[in-house]
Length: 335
Image (tube, rainbow, N blue to C red; front, top):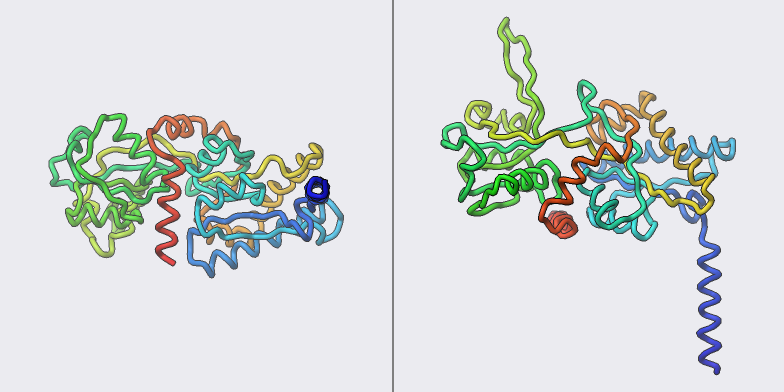
């Protein structure tokens, strides 16, 4: 009987704790924003501090008519999968993730998230591309010619460097002799240039034409541009074999179940979105976001913008969660 009573009181105590869990945005449970590291730790830390401070003050003023009251915390995760699971346990409230990570979180794991914003880059572009490259003197003219060849993908968690080109090869019925992960897009270009592999995949952007000394000069803007100092003839030696369809730029995603109160939930989500849109209009905000993610502008987006890439990713025969875990192992090795 004593044991039964002990269990009973423990359950009651657990329920009381659950019922009194501090609300999101309170001092004991700040609104938590995850920022995927894309630059050096010091720069991302300084930039994220500015974002966090602005969002905190903006929402506080809207809710409480003072610069404090809605607490926000920035977090730079140690791994990609940590972001996904943080949404599953309601520890993450917001994250800037890549397209692949968003699809995994929302559609594979089915955690309650939605894309609210995305970025525009040069000339208002909201999409980017994947490309498959080969040496110009390789004799490879079509995707079919890649059968039995050695291939370099960029990174296991890269949408343009792995997920999309893998799908392109799969659809074409290509069976590679072997493949490696070069970790970075410029490494892929170098490996193809130096004939370490027959082909590789990286991000693609259209070249631009400039007038230099009265002559038209094509300026590369895909991954080949990253090694042009080391290999000045890379534009001639490395050709683009195939280009994918457009991939939507990375989503800025928000947890949809911040509060049980539907009215408050809707209001706070809208305030977060508006805070970020207003932040970018400030000189300090535009600079911080440019430093963080090389973006020109933040714009609103709907989940439907990711329908096409979602269908493609979900149809690709890959262990999607395992793919992110491979990425995490590489991150840990670098530490």
